[in-house]
Amino acid sequence: MAQLSSGISLGLAVVLLSLVSSLQAPPARLDHRNSAFGSITRRTLLECRDPNPYLNFTLDTAGPLANVQTVVATVSGVLQPSASDWIGVFSSATHNYSDCPAKAVLYSQTGDIASLPLLCDYPLKFKFLSSDPGYLICSNKTCAGKQCAVKTCSGSVSFRLINIRTDVTFVLFSGGLAVPCILKVSQTLPFAAPNFPLYGHLSLEDSSGTSMVLAWVSRSFDIHYVEFDHGRKSMDEVTSFQIGDLCDAVPGPAKDFGWHDPGFIHIARMQNLRPGTRYSYRYGSDNSGWSNLKTFTTPPAGGAYGTKFLIFGDMGKAERDGSLEHYIQPGALQVIDAMANEAVDAIFHIGDLSYATGFLAEWDHFLEMIEPVASKTAYMTAIGNHERDYPGSGSMYSTPDSGGECGVPYRSYFRMPVQDIDKPWYSIAIGPVHFTVISTEHDWSSTSEQYAWMKSDLESVDRFSTPWIVFTGHRPMYSTQLPGIISKLLPGVDPKFVAAVDLAVWGHVHNYERTCAVFQGRCLQHPIKDLAGVDFFDTTIYSAPVHAVVGMAGFSLDDFPRNFSSWSLIRRSAFGYARVTADKTKLLFEVDELHSWFLHVTYVFFIPVHYNGRNSS
Image (cartoon, rainbow, N blue to C red; front, top):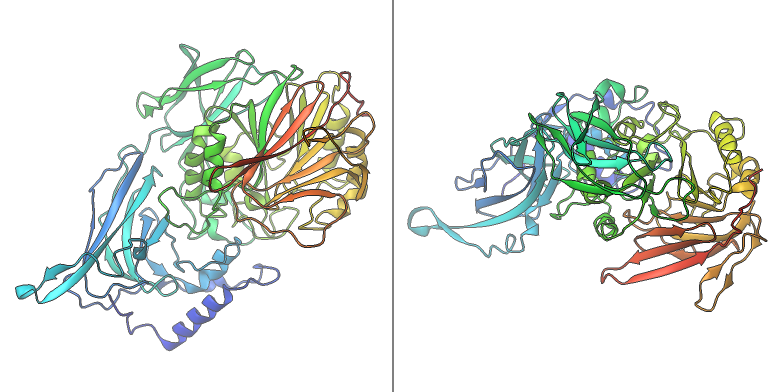
């Protein structure tokens, strides 16, 4: 289709080849504190030296775009279709079409080491034209030139766009992802309603069952409201974050080519509600527009007899149009779509939410993906390494997993009842279950502030009101995949588990694993199977919690090693999530595996308990 410009020097070609090679296998530890990438001069991205006079690049709309719209991009007049031809969608608020191959270090630091467009700016999404099955074989030929002297080819790909509040541009490239050059640039497409209120999601601020917190995004600083319960209204508080609020110690994608203006995040509270009651609501303003009418049901108050909730980690996102981003989690869509059919009181997403990892427009993609679920059910979260960790930022682990976000977008988008800014641990009660939600990305060893809070929280639980304690965070204490991942904490932490916790649920490892009732690596009780084959634990005789890893909600799955410890009872590598149903006498833990043919395979166990519970002291 086109040849790369001869202006690419031999030296630059060597750099590019070196970088492509380096992306095939990551170093054992990524440490960019001594990186010199900040001194690399930005290079102008080359235009392809393409003498083809017939080449044309068109879109099926001139805009403005709806809040969700599919745009078809068509390339015609092609002389030689190539597998290296691709189309990227850029936010014109940031793009400069500069080529920075040395920025590969910023891409790879997020954990994604696949082939990527090594641009100073990055595409919101992209597709190879070869995804049109007729493109490479030129199944659509057209006459060109005098007397049909030339036969040209064409191809089309479609992109599902959501409202990210900034204009977008389509760019046609050749040269693949490693050495891209520009062939054509489309007109700029604005969104029709950048101020429109979007991506509402709910959370809880206390255990009363009488209030719900709603968060949504827009580009408008005007006063917005949530209207609910047939005419009641609550005004928003508005927040946002800017590039200067992100990590300072080591520059990362979030402050470089990954930056995208988040607009404004609106937070409003619906209070004086009734537990277990269905309400309708909408949010927005007369100036910006109003969301569609939506509904939610308040959860039971802490201490009520029963509840049901979902819990999982490591979801991320994938694109419904099949296009690629810098980081795709292949199981995310089937998992979120399956959960949309669940009727539960709350959802707990325990770390690694969007995997935006510094590519900030992808938070919008994630919020839009979860909106059908999170707008009708309280969506509670715990922070994970891909939200928080970064060198020199105060996180417990100095890995660059957040891409320079350092928890700022996470805490801006998701309002949890946390202790303070950058102290993202909290507890809440729903029905008979007390949830202790910690941050494994902050110090929780026996001398830490978080440990003191955890100790106080567990000791204060009223086991007559909430006989079950579910302890949850991102990185697991027990995992066959990562033996000893936080083993240095076990001597200080395990005794508190023995005294109080019934069930500990974790993410981070991308599969499902369940233990016996385990204390410091030893099984204190194995389950007994009932007549239906369900594993049965008796809390009147066991003295340690059962641990479950459920990091299976979307990220590429981890296989298990051949050798495993005696405390590991069940190991499954499949996409899915856990469902927990509890009343004051029993707790049922189920894991739904979602297969491509939508067969649900369930593994369950009971933990019965006396109605009066166990003391936590």
